[in-house]
Image (cartoon, rainbow, N blue to C red; front, side):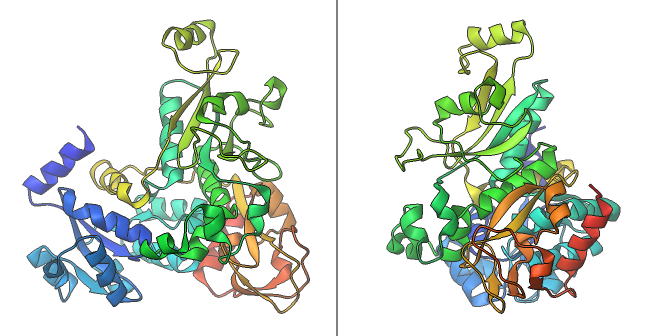
Length: 446
């Protein structure tokens, strides 16, 4: 039975999926816009540091004021409306909430929210992929021990890439490569919140209209987010990562099967079975027609002459050998698609992407020469960007995870382009996020 049919059954039987949402920013607002249009789902509560901003965002996406007049979770359940609060713990602890959607974008806080949800027997849809990037394998293990489902959020590219990889493997195809698109030139790694809109392709007015956060969008642009998302995909699928960071080969959709081949066959991959990100810009900055900038893709291989002939007979676009074929979705709709994860978790008990091992890591890397006493400002900021590395490489060097490089003081100088280590910073060792990360390093020896 389709997920939509299962949701309709939930609605008809008056047994809706009861949700708690933590964080009502841009991503959360996009999902909020879809909830009133989805049968069998009841948003019981929203927790946000600023309830007034949450109400403003709800009005922006078209929610009527009477839908948010509940004074408690109990009141919301009784009357079918939504409670808005700044008390996330009250939301996580409420016994009648089934799923917590973590949507803050703050990786350190997200770990607190996720662990508390597990302790209260709640499933978790984790939109804050930054947290998954530095401790997702242990979060998945903790969820399994608690008897709940933990998942990446559909609509975000990692879960959609995992879906394509699952399609390929379920059909019997070996996965040669999988990933997403991105607008990339090497100097973007130095971008700051002051330069982001020009590089990104938006005017300041467009950014203001959309309520877009320059630091968050700079994390997309400077390579941090592609590295974070590629880490999540690698850890969920077992695909390997490049030995010294993403290559960002430029390619149109038509050329993806050409470039996502092993180097020995004319492509860019070190070997078969890797994650990579395709750039929508040529190396000289020219825009590539029919790009994959906002999409996701998977390249598979025909292992027999018969399968290769099938590709040809059905006009599948392949590389010149006829063996490599790329399936793609050219767009992702971000928070508008989170309902797929919610329905999959509640109706099938299945994640839409979850870490199965520790294969990859994102290490904080200096955007400029940094001096002792400076404070790191995390992904998208002025000091560091995130570099994708194999987990074994990061573990050997004692790499500082990008997700923990927030409000951390440097104790040693670091040169531009150098990846940081634990010993370079004075970090707060009391947070759950730090402890979980260190526990993961011990629990998944490399």
